[in-house]
Length: 108
Image (tube, rainbow, N blue to C red; front, top):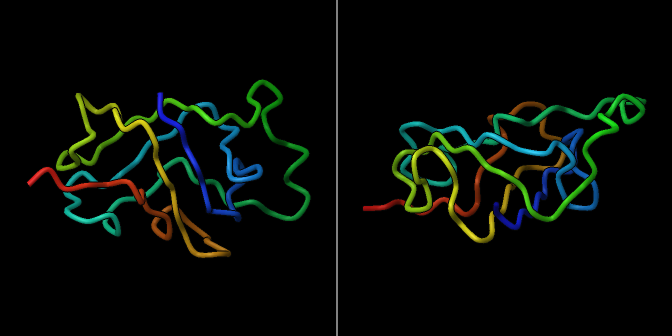
């Protein structure tokens, strides 16, 4: 489990830079840079949608992260082994491709 900080404020699961989803998937199977990754678990927050969030998951600092970024030094059998992960994205992101794993480090 990684200490996660999420700066994607338009994500439904983001609460004070913590994630309330419970686990996330980082995509970017062929990524060689952070910008080629994404948080595939991103869900865009919409007006009034907060009321429909899962009541079983609360925002937490540590989270399980599955990772498809095969070239990342922290990827071990599709699980992220980094102690700290930053998920970043522009303000007002509309889909997962506008997000990225800021912790991605090429293993080359």
